[in-house]
Image (tube, rainbow, N blue to C red; front, side):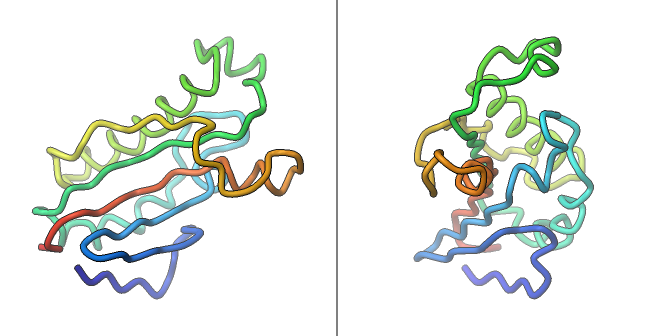
Length: 140
């Protein structure tokens, strides 16, 4: 699979290993702080993803270790697992609404698992609040 992306459009990074491409974006860039409304940055990915209709697209949601705030709790989000699921689900629903691989996998909830940085600083927590979009397959 070959993916070329010159303008990351808000993505924090792209990693290709074998037939798998992982795109990572800070959840802070995709969602307002403490919110669930998806930012328009995913629109930039749609033209590229339309080329991958036979590629499996998985959306993985991660959080830091900070408990959810009162605003999210009022919206029915009681913990980081709920938050991770809701944010990843929003991304999957958006892709499907745009006709991108309508059979893509259900969102995967990883919440605080697999941190990429220590959670003891604001910078580290920001890195751990992320969405990963994983493309697997032959790239067609």
